[in-house]
Length: 247
Image 1 (cartoon, rainbow, N blue to C red):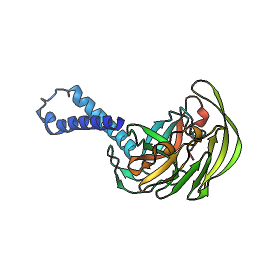
Image 2: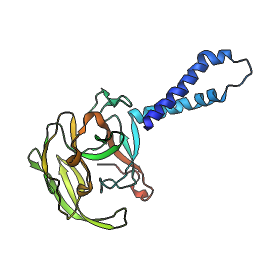
Image 3: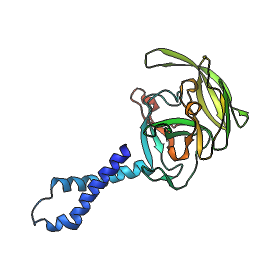
């Protein structure tokens, strides 16, 4: 929605600027000042253009709305997403016109939620096209290989209702990519086997028992990719997180 608003503003201010260059300026009597519409369009067009290009092809900011990616990302983290790691895409249409790379296991990726593409989700890439993912409770295998996880200790966090939740923190190794995950001492009913289709990715939250992810709604299509999360640039409640890279 924001990209659409930016595009409309860019089109309007650009059209007024061009109209002034090719017609209004010539028709305006000498000594008569520009109208406010022309003045503001000429001032804002370069700024809007720069912001639009940066957000579309370089980096885009996002805010983490939930705890599904704890302990990697916390609710309230403001992050930056690299828009060109996985290729340059046409704004709004989101089709790739220059291929640069593809998601890898372990990447933290932002994508349009498949069941409602107006929403952006952020999860970790667990399965690539063609992979077989099997999950039974807290046990996961990728192509028959179990994910190695080493216990690190207890992890406490607050919920929205101010309840203290105690989880177990593990260091997981996903095809050589190490990252922390959280598991809870509760029964898990998300069991099954999933073969990832072509041009699709199996996504999971690091807070494994508190994440609605590919175990629920299936895979994230290639066309829904937004970009790769790489840095926390702000957190109002914890300044120490500012500048942390996202692994």
